[in-house]
Length: 210
Ligand SMILES: [Mg+2]
Image (cartoon, rainbow, N blue to C red; front, side, top):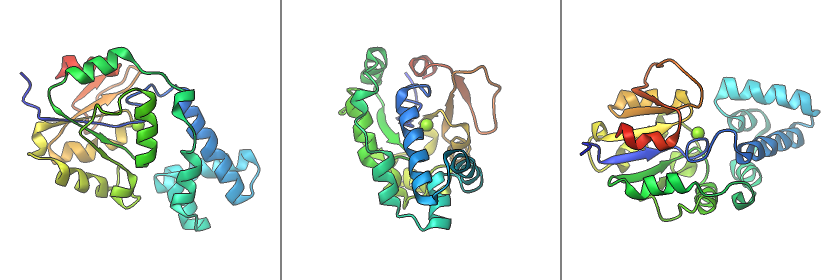
């Protein structure tokens, strides 16, 4: 029996694959929003977006800094699609999640509405005990310290009794520093990275690790 009491799941790229059409749609909508706000042609908007992402962590942070974009307007547009048109439930994943005895949390840089949209499409609406999302973090996404402070307060026990699984490797070290066990979900062969305790290549492999 595992000593872990809580399993924390990232959402996008973790509960469904990174190469899913949902990721393509999110990317497409962020690109269109960027072009509309900046007035730049697509290629230049794309370059500026990559710059924002590298320098300020997210496209939104850059747009807020230089174009005074309203976060809710940006989020409503970029998340404004029905995920049921783009992804289907993964029966093996749903069976695994139902089988895990631990408390289960979603810890996402998306909005609550986005999490609900994805979880509905995956038929996982009732599978999680709590959802921590971007507004809970005052719009400061992982790996900013704020989301991890919120997460620590939401745990009912020491961080050492929690596992965090996530596809973006840069979001794992802050959780690892708190004492959580960190699992990096990556489809590629990869070397252990700072702040990573374990690598899995398919979310289904999480159960074996536990
Ligand atoms: Mg992710």
